Image (cartoon, rainbow, N blue to C red; front, top):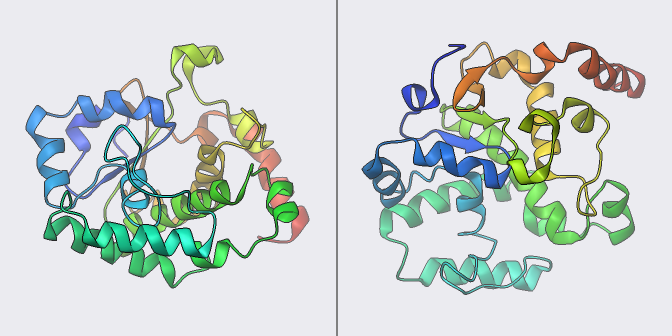
Length: 242
């Protein structure tokens, strides 16, 4: 760890940014102007969403405007076929996306497996619908893909935009630990942070997982909020998963 150093000093090609979607833009924008554009042009996307939305997902309407909600086998296969044919992705980008999806589809996080989950079961876990669960699982897989398979670094943003009206404009550890719902579901960021905690002993010492607030590296949330994360640890022990 390099506590106190800025994000822009530590970000390297191939690294990926995680955190609340609206909070990631300042981090991307803190990089020299040509960097993000060049990295994306050679298939080194900066955000996990960019991998998901250009494989099994759909690109936002204000971007390229094509695709279907990945909530069935048919729509997932339609999106995969579409992204393989489009002109707006160059060969380097398509190769990187194919590497990602090939790795994803062979795991328990695979979208084509996730769509088999019954609606009542996925809602019990805090999901709004099938699409919610598919992206949740893919984003957790993305952490493993970047850190373990690609041997790159995940830069996790703990900032929360001011208009969310969260005290301190920072992700609330208690909300993560207790899986508090927002906008009708448990945020995907909650699942990602809990995944980071479970893998902390492997990922933190390797220097492949860093946390930031206001563009500066800070301690992992379970260090500064140890008492809150002890609740999650106790729950895991109770379930016998440790």
